[in-house]
Length: 299
Image 1 (cartoon, rainbow, N blue to C red):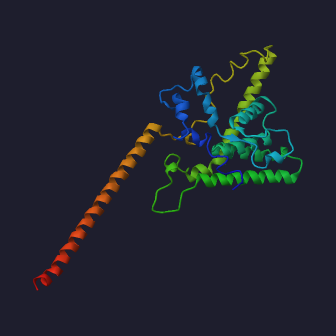
Image 2 (cartoon, helix red, strand yellow):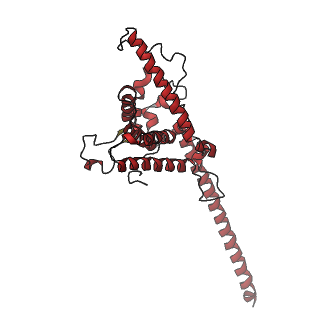
Image 3 (cartoon, rainbow, N blue to C red):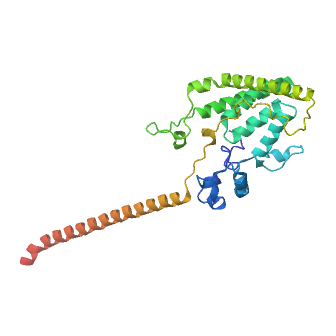
């Protein structure tokens, strides 16, 4: 494991553990966020949700980064900020490149988006010829990506073997390991999605050429209004990787109170049984002493 993968960085999920901790008072700071009836998509409510930014996992400027002589941020930032910048430059700038793909892979890995990370490393490895003019560096990139992918597949298949009599870890009841078939199809699924994406880009470029040829300005707010009207969403569906388990503070307090009461009752019962046993023992000893002393008194 790397030095930076420690409890200090709190990598592994898109949100920090404080978000769902009953001791950090996030429920008090953003009460509406924890109410099932709240419409999180309502822009009018977004100002009230602003404090959630304090609970986004941060990335960058890891251990040893301050010694690197490059102009860059010297402290970690919420992971979505660099990701949005990369996606913007990827889509509307110079397009795909291995550096962006590698950065996305490392970032997604740090926030627990293992499938996205696997795909990003695959994309980076396939563009290795554009990564560096040095063949050794290109080979290093491919080797690094394959190592990351192997580690991801290992975590996806993880099942605790500490005690064969116990079931899987509790979190695996929410996010069970994928089937062997799913893992074997990672590459073919990537190929299919990449082919679809390339076709989408070609259609987009053709549309742009036609619009420009017709005299339409690229600065027109409705330039793309007719493009993709009949196309379904291509965004990744929300799945188990995005699941956040949360128990309301009131429920947690009630559970703790019940355990305390149960412990008190059990302890009281043990204490009462012990006292009763001592009393019985004392009585038995006194009765034995009385029998032993009886005949001597008669003499």
